[in-house]
Amino acid sequence: MRTLKVLLRTAAAAILALHAMMGAAHAQGTATFDHAGLARQALEAHIRPGYAALVGSAQALAKELGDYCAQISVDRRRAVDRAFDGVVAAWGRIEHIRFGPVTVDNRLERIFFWPDRRGLGARQVAATLRTRDASVIDPVGLAGKRIALQGIGALEATLFDAPLNEGEDRAFRCAYAKAISANIADIAGAILKEWTDPDLYSRHWLNPGAGNPHYLTPSETTLALAKAFDTGLERVRDDWIAGPLGFGPQKRPLPAVLGKSGRTLRLVQAGLEGLRNLFAGGGMQKAIVAVKHINPSVNTRINARLVLQEIATALGQVRRLSRQGRPLDPIAMQGPLIAVGFPLKNARLQAAALLTLTANLSIGFNASDGD
Image 1 (cartoon, rainbow, N blue to C red):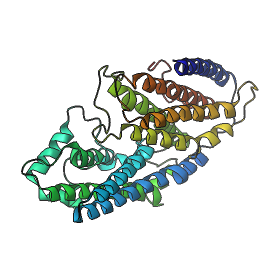
Image 2 (image 1 turned 90 degrees about the vertical axis):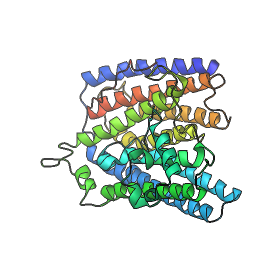
Image 3 (image 1 turned 120 degrees about the vertical axis):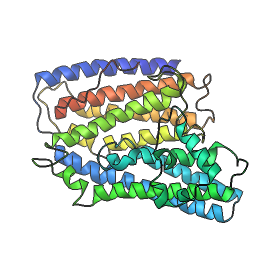
Image 4 (image 1 turned 60 degrees about the vertical axis):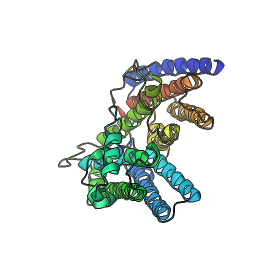
């Protein structure tokens, strides 16, 4: 309870600071925000490494599954589980980049079909395992199948959802999981190629202007990153944490993301790590504090640091809860998980104010969203 009160006081202080900053933004002009520098640093230090990590982790899982399928053993299954953790972590750290190449050919949904409120994916996977459709054990054939059969959700259902069913072939299940892993690596590799090849999407990202089909002005790349950061924090707080507790937009408990494998908080942790890296390593913090203001009462350096401190507070709490072994217990964990939401809301408030102030952006954040 004492921790919750401290968080509430911190939230109140952050909101007061927000109003002061917004007032200063209207009253004072700002120096030039380095949109081009941010775009390049985010690309080189965050986006490309993030997708490269996803490619590598999916390839590693496919290899471990190959070894496991060749000779099933407890130790090899543990190696598979660790490799699956790697895929979850890699995806969590880059999934907030929901613009650009990931939006082509349903790549986002093919990597992770969620939320699946009607359990469509699990039913499709179960049917596939029952009928043993040979085309899904080939990554090329799998790529043409239904979205829910292709990504991390299907992989979770295949590896963790249920024991071997009557009439089901264990070797087929293993081969299907291996094909899913290879398919994820292929999709992520295609995304990475577009962000890396100077003649593909990265050219549009780095060169806004007339004739660019995606970005007409340099500020539009900053806006894309700002929205990714804002909605990423919102998704972690309101969907991944609040949803299973019944505090999300649906106002009723929803199935926990990756709950069947017990990886919910692992994904939450990775999501926060990725957002922290976008803000710090990806160049947002640097671009914000580089803008100088006339008003001496506005200290962007301190407020930018506060964004990272709030994420660190939430991340520390999530890591502690992960070690307790029952992260979504409705009685034991409800209070601690609710407390995670306060610093995440503070981080959103502060980041929105900073970007409004320094980059002259409006990212559509409503300060009354959520509690």
